[in-house]
Length: 177
Image 1 (spheres, rainbow, N blue to C red):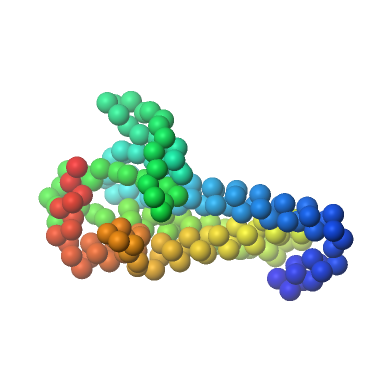
Image 2 (cartoon, rainbow, N blue to C red):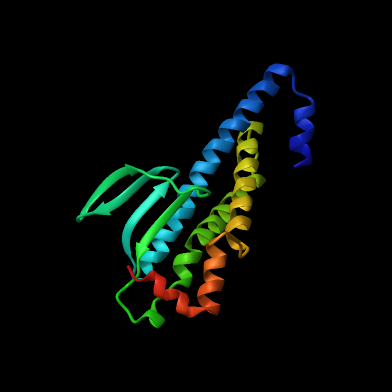
């Protein structure tokens, strides 16, 4: 990281401007990819737990199952970058699995970080390193924001949902669609 920063001090203005542009583009791409990956983690883990597909949203673009057909619509939820909604399996409420589904996004983000970290050992161009640093930074932020139990108003993050459903299993009654 120190070598990466020291190279920036040696850059001329044009290269610095390109580095700035690469940084902005890297940030946008990283946010999009990591939210997509996070929600895909929920999808995979939810389906693995017996849930069925309802909708998958990235920013305001939503893929949903409506009358047995897949449709693309625009929909947003304030304070979220994405959302994967699944219908729980037809089981008694106390047997509905919730932990893997709720942790799926965190698991996916953790896997992404573990896959990318070894790339720093390679001899890569400064711009690729810049992208990787930004990608990891955004991934760590997403991991912290979803992996430490928190709530904002009546909305829990992923770890908050896991904690709530473990400590107050009667909250599962709200899962039945």
